[in-house]
Image (cartoon, rainbow, N blue to C red; front, side):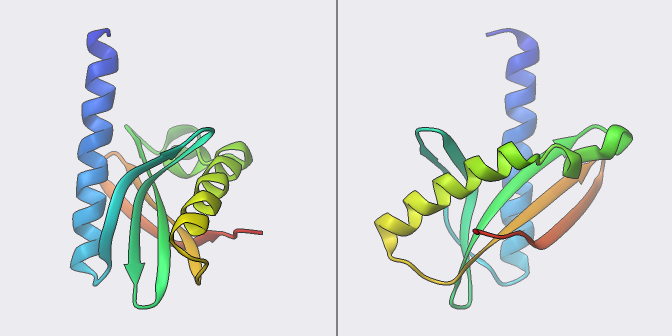
Length: 118
């Protein structure tokens, strides 16, 4: 792997850790990180009371070109939904939502209920 790839991976991992800490400080309980299935991955799975929360974490150096939020395309959403369906099949169907934790430079934004399963 190139140094750029390693740097991007370490920055992504740091953003996921910061997001998990941010959510925990707001009362969510971490279940797992990096849940992977063929065709999709969920960065963070946590619980908010009785709701399972699937969290996508995105980091961009700045908000230029739409920033982190713009990188969560319909294709990315379909991959997250695919992984969530696998999670729910394995752990029991329950109320769920999709949140995004976005880092644009040093700014963090938590988008609750960013998109729907359907």
